[in-house]
Each structure stands twice: as structure tokens, then as C-alpha cells.
Image 1 (spheres, one colour):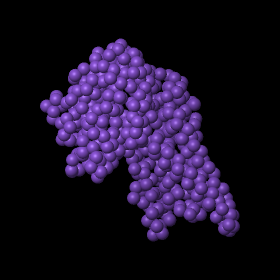
Image 2 (tube, helix red, strand yellow):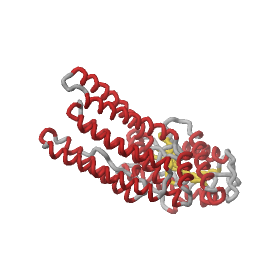
Image 3 (spheres, helix red, strand yellow):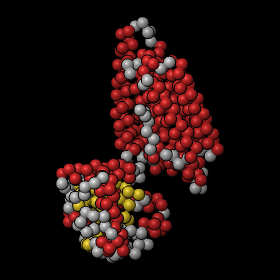
Image 4 (spheres, one colour):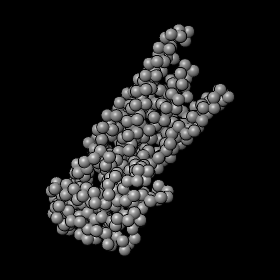
Length: 406
């Protein structure tokens, strides 16, 4: 039984830091397995695993602080980061000393450890990595800190602060319980109830944190891993209900030229505007918009046939062009435009991932045809649900947008 499952959302891009984070995860999971062995586990074995975890965490924190010093990170980041390290050691020691008084000691301790690590990586460690990358790109430490502060997702920042405050409350209650008179059972029970309430609040906050980990930080829509999960669910649902599933694959025309002409900050703002326009063109709550990668977006359209998906694609293309964002380097139009590949059909029998891949391949082939035929348009793949071949892509139906093909 693993308490913490490592995935790509927890990568900072700093190889040594990521390796040490993974080492902490391994120790957390080892402690989890030891705790859940029950009363058969010797106390000295439990203590040995816990002390190894503390020692490893201390070494990791020291290495992180040395790395921040070597990169001369701004002190406004360094001091809070060091404080978080010290607080973790104090909190986990307090909780460990208290475990005999906890109602569910194993669940409480492991929940605290794994949630803290997830919060720490998603918050201050990834912020550290981004600032280091900015410094390597030529900014000074103060500029890197200001850039991180100005671009940081305020929703994520507020949630991380809220969860951090809950951890602080939890740790303080642990310390109070340790000092309580162990012979006054009623007082201990009252404090334990308070701790249970804090744990419930922490669990709710962690659910919100999980939701944020599924969101693209720049565009505030679903990210690629969440789309991959959602696609398999929708393929299964469409097959059960014998309903067609539509898919749009969107690509901003000549986006690299846009970045080269106007700069990356303008490029980020452009992508945000495109995402807003695409979302505004989707009128059903079941329609699902996500960032597929770079300047590519995808839209899942449950219970939508080829003609219906094409109408929605036209609406999205027109909405983006209608924003009239100047794009002097585009060969498609004088404003920012989209090319869209459209696919729809009833998922065929067989493994879900193969059916999902077939739908993606159809939309991708149609997107290629939209680009080949002039961009600023939507092209629909053939109506058959089979994976399109190169010849099928070449015969995909092309429907000009309301704004006019360039």
C-alpha cells in the first residue's frame, strides 16, 4: 500500500532536487508500510524508520538551502523557504510523539506527511525552480522573484497559504495535546475531537489542491494528464450509451511567429485570450476544454455527431478571429486565427486506449488538412470511426468559417 504516488505534476526540473523528493516519497511509503503492519511491528523498528526519514529530510533541506545560496535567490524567497523546512521538522516530531493519543495514528501521520510533501513541491519548491530558470535566462534574483510573484496563479497561491495555515493549526494542537494531563481523559478526548475537525478541514483543502493539480496554470483550463483521464471516461460512456463522441483539436496559426514578433509574454496573453474565446463558444456543461500541449487545445463533445461537432468548431474559429488580436506575421489573416481538426463517431469495440487513440488520430489528421488547405478554418475527418489513413486525411471535408477562409 503506497501512501504517496509520484507523478509528473511533482517534477521541478531540478534533477538532484527531484531525486531527493523521490527519496522522501520512498521513505514515506516505507514508514506507511511499517505503520500498517500493526502491533506486530517492534517499536525499535518503527523508530528506526522514522529517524531515517528525519535525517534524510534534514539532508535534503540543507542541500536545497545550499542550492538557493549558490544561485543567489532573492532573500524574500529564501527566508520563508528555510522557515518551512524548520516547521516541518518541528511538526512531524510533535505528531510522532503524540501518536499513542491519536484516534487513527497511522492515517493521521501519513496523511500529514504526504500532503505536506505535495503542498511543498507544488508550492515553494516549484517556485524556487522557476526562479532559478529565470536567473539562468539572464534575470537578476530580484527580477526573478518579482516575475514569479506577478505570474503566480493567485488561486493556487491562496489555496497553498490556506493549507499551510491548516498544517500550522494541526501542529499546534499536537503540541498542546502532548502537554495535556494524560490522566484527564475527558480533556484529551475534547482535544482529539478538535484535531479530527482540523484533519477534516485539511482533507477538504487537499481535495481542492488535487483539483488545482489538474489545471493548466497559464490558461486555467484542464491540463493534458486530466484530459487523458477524461477522454478514456468519455470513450467508455459513449460506448455504453451508444452515442457519438466528438473531438476538436485546435492549433493557433503561426504561433511561433507570433512569439518571435511580439514576445513570449504577449504569446502567453494570446493563448489565454484564445482559451477564453474557445470556452465562451462552448454552451454545454458537458463540453470539456483542455490544453493539449504548447499552443494546441482540445475539446471533447459528448453525444455530438460529425455535423454538430463541425458547427461548434466553426463557432470556436469565429470566436477567436472575432477578438481581432493583431498578428502581422501570419500568412492566414491579419489577426490571430485557429486551425481545427474535427472528428466524431461511436467508439469501436476493443481496449479503451485504442479507441481513444483512433479518435485522436482522426482529429489530428483533419487538423493537418486544415493547415494544408490554408488555415483559419475547421476540417472534419470522414464519418467512419476507423483510424484515418493518409489518403483519408487528404479527402477530409473542409468547411470555411464564418469569418472567411484566408
